[in-house]
Amino acid sequence: MAQSTKDSSATFQEIPNPKKEKFQPKPKKSGLYSAILPGMGQLYNRQYWKVPVIYAGMAVAVYFLAFNIDQYNTYRKAYIGRISNDPTIHDAFEGIYDTQSLKQLQDGYKRYVDISVLVTALGYVIQVMDAVTFAHLKNFDVSKDISMQVQPIALPGGLGVGLVLNFK
Image (cartoon, rainbow, N blue to C red; front, side, top):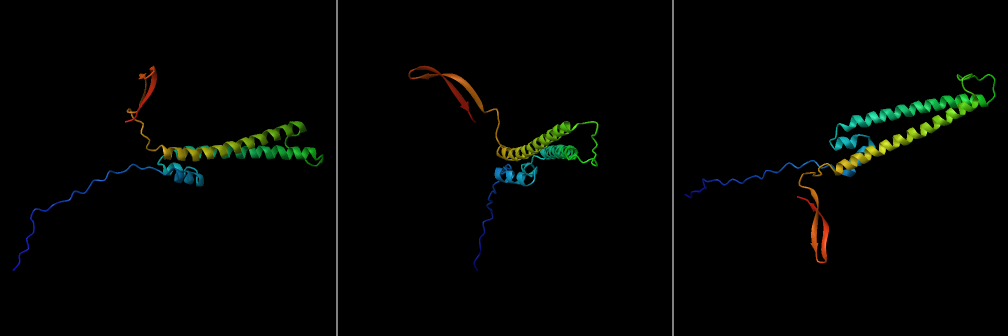
């Protein structure tokens, strides 16, 4: 009868304890998310506090855009009614503004509409750039080990000044 001999001293393999890696967002993905839906790139970057700021900015932009379009249309209709010389057409600005003033107000609000559209588009682009930039810089190490010093150095031809950067 054959005896099976088992080693009573079991060998245990140590399971390596994998370090939990820091979350590193992908900048392209972050920018794409932010371009599709404003604030989504910031959510992907785990910068949750920025989302209400983005939507508050969008709300302000939409308010000013709607207000300026409404004022532009109001003054435009009044101006068109005045220059048509139709005696049956009356506007709310009779006795307040003359025809030239209505034209100036219409032109002024047209400029404000253009500026509102430009600022809104600029805000959209900035929030996309913010998402991409902060995805790149999410785990950027800014420690006290990074230093810069100006030191005198000896050169073969004499003395000089050198810039020393220490990265640790």
